[in-house]
Length: 91
Image 1: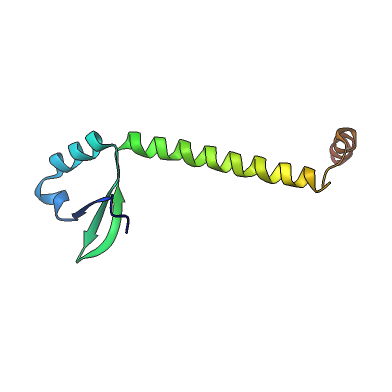
Image 2 (image 1 turned 120 degrees about the horizontal axis):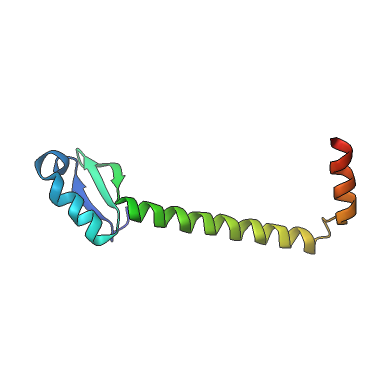
């Protein structure tokens, strides 16, 4: 468990949901909800979720670019005209 992650019990969703949601929105950080002392789920504000999705997409794009550069450096490439001829033949 990350020490900087706010932790609450699932009970907060029934005892004081409005305050919990407000804290999520204000902090912009996720919160770990526990059930019987065990991690049960993570809650986060929609804006934080969207920001996380953007960061993940950027990381995946960078990984794909690194993979492509490594393939090019290893000579695992073919001329563009060969690619286009192959694609045209498939149609």
